[in-house]
Amino acid sequence: MAEMVLKNARIKMGTSGAPSTTLSPFLRSVTLNYSAELLDKTAMGNASRRRLAGLKDWTATLEFNQSFNTSNINKFFFNLVGKAGSSNCYISIRPESSGVGSTHRYYGKGLLEGYTPISGGVGDLATFSVNILCDGNLTRSSNTQPA
Image 1 (spheres, rainbow, N blue to C red):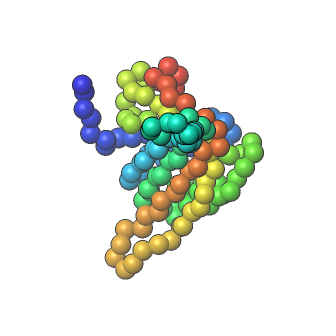
Image 2 (cartoon, rainbow, N blue to C red; image 1 turned 120 degrees about the vertical axis):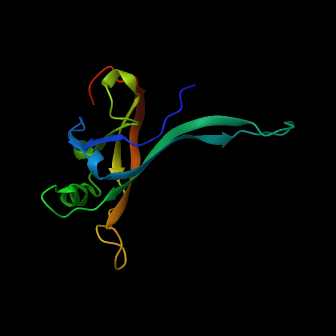
Image 3 (cartoon, rainbow, N blue to C red; image 1 turned 60 degrees about the vertical axis):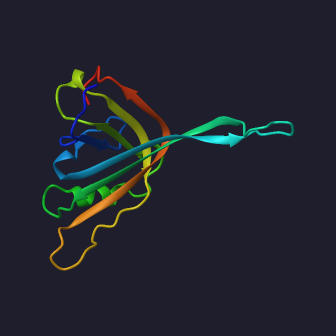
């Protein structure tokens, strides 16, 4: 098994179906959660719990260094809050930025739950976190296409 150190993840986001804005230079951490509801179908006569897999769900939590300069990362996230329909938040997450064929890619359409542009105390590094909530399937690929 090949272990890896997460030090060069690649995050792209956009609102038009193909994530086109690279946010990796500001990224501090990424957490991608993928799950399914487990519905209890236990009935009389069962000696143990019985379950049935229900709807799948995913969330992405991203932490960034804040920037209010011409990079427009602040404007980018401010304008994504609550966007729905065809202008949802499309996201592409790769554990490393190396060649397309050498890593996996996770891709999905979600909604930005909220954005806190300013938070911290005197002397703190300006950072912010966002939560992207699922609004469709999460796709995993071996990067046969550029992302």
